[in-house]
Image 1 (cartoon, rainbow, N blue to C red):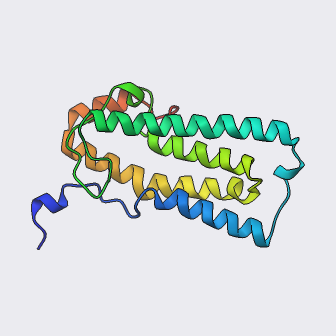
Image 2: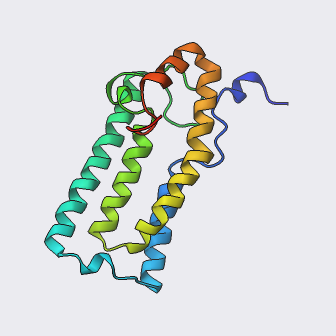
Length: 163
């Protein structure tokens, strides 16, 4: 039987970084074997400029989230307990800046490297992330931090928009 400390963690179905990494790898393989060619028809200068802006925006967003969690002295890895609720900095604008940033970065990579498949696979990846990770993390945080987390959820959108 597991002790209480080992259960003090989000019950995520998949380790979160595995989703974007698998999406990137799958996109690259599919692009190699069955290229679509949509992105390649874009003007290269515009494609690279927009891709760079989107990639950098994603990396900055995810990095800001990571730094905020480190400043808050809580674990980033969801297989470990959350030791504190971080609700300021980038977390004052989105409850999931690491996931938003990672998704943006994937879109930037798609543009930079002509990975049409990434644009098709990003939606299923985001849906998987939402149901297999985000909702489970939210349930855990609500159980652990109660009304403080519920008030935070009312004030800050899940993904920079909506709730």
